[in-house]
Image (cartoon, rainbow, N blue to C red; front, side, top):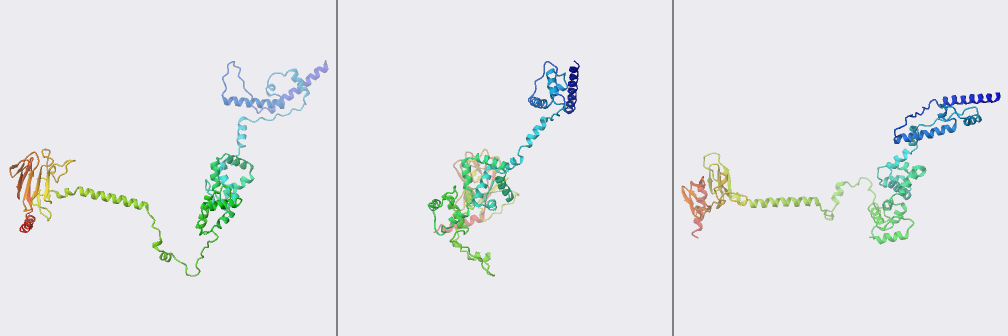
Length: 449
């Protein structure tokens, strides 16, 4: 009996020591709170994730040593006491469990940030173009000068990318995966842009510059040298590159003339004098021709408008500034003077009336005053060969000459200072006596003959 109590006291002391050690080791970990209510609220998604992480961490802690829930809880059972008594007396400190926030940070830090950044600047098409160009030329400087990438990479960036594709396993693996996903048409387009190697240019330079090679010539060249030319070369691509080499005098039968030595260097003015203008091609300037055509069309339109308005220039309208008599010029035959304006008659026949959109006349009487009672073609004034003026009434209302009515279809002779009244508008008819005298003299000379 005494031995049983002694062993039990030893077990209790060892259990108490393990409790103190576990409580000291787990003193920094906060206790998990649990609710005693029967109805608990539902957990959100983030809380479910955190609780699952907490459960897994507690399980790990319990497996390494003593369960944390039992350390701060009730008395352990007899079976647990037996397990504890069999365990060594020195307690094993539990490993601290990482918090959820730390686990997330570790996962993010493991991602290759530099790789994603490089892949964002270097497209899969650029990588494939770089690989094909280097395989053709074996020179990164030539690749930098001759290949047009999606971005303007420097020579250092091209070198670093090539070395990364060769020696960096992560970048090489991601680049290969991205290049495998390219469309076959995109791959064919990239292969067609591959630079020409020295062996290919050497074979092309053997084609004479004086000959006129066709596509069949370059196709035959491809068949005879399949190992020398790149797999994506076509006859049309070879012809285009041959023409470029011919332009820069890179063919075997072409020679570049050396510059003259001494003071006999040809300047620009001497070279311009040597040019034969007759041999120069007349290059058509489509923009200039279009501008000239538009200007010519505009000028013809203006001439047509002037021709249509020519009858208006037969009578000039002049505003009256005073009561003095007008000064006649050599082109004015007579003047029909009103209270507001005066009409200069410069042709042998003019029409009087009211102008509308559909009816154009020489003398628009509406400029003098209200003319709604005047017909659109009220009358005509004519100059005979003998120097006499006559007015013919063609409107519905009568025209009064010096108080005498001239009915529709009638005419009357106009003299100097005659008063013409048309629908309450009064005008004075003044004749250029000097010009009329010359007209009568010319008519008298012609009549005897």
